[in-house]
Length: 225
Image (cartoon, rainbow, N blue to C red; front, side, top):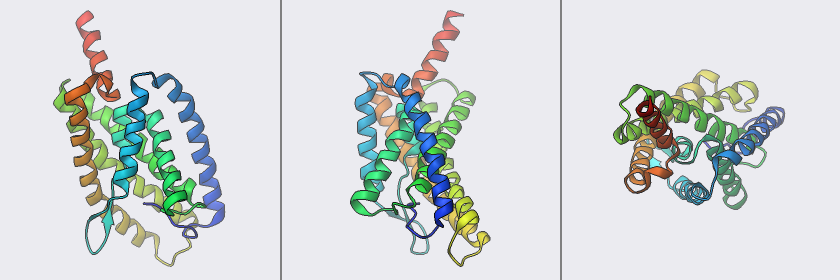
């Protein structure tokens, strides 16, 4: 999912860098109201955790491997605004320190993982949470589905970028089939890790989980009514 330099042409890379920059500006504005003394340390720990696990790859199929994106997980734990910022910091550090993804392609990767991955994952989480019973077990199930679905959507973002300005010789249909097929498998791992991580935090400090606090507020409102 980390895009190397030269795989997408410069005009497309610049355009998506602009979109990513605008998204981060909005995220910074939204994060100001989401962070407090209790959630700020969790945001730092979440970014550190994602940085570490993104360095670990697991086999998928036909010699390919995948790693945790962490967008849905971060959004559930600290909120989508903070999650977008945290994931972007991780991507910048990986590109600068480990050459994991090209610098000219950084805006492309941020768009796919920090914006699409975070917001699609959180949107699915919210949707599933509304359908399921309002309890802690439902939070883990919603986290699994949010993580699972966010990954192929992020991969679809790359397919869009390739369709606009790809420099490779593969057809768009080939790229679409390979990316979505592989990332559905990666998404299963993403969903499992997201569910386990959210469940672990819920077991000890559910009051810190951004996604669960929303569920708690709904319950309190219904009790008052």
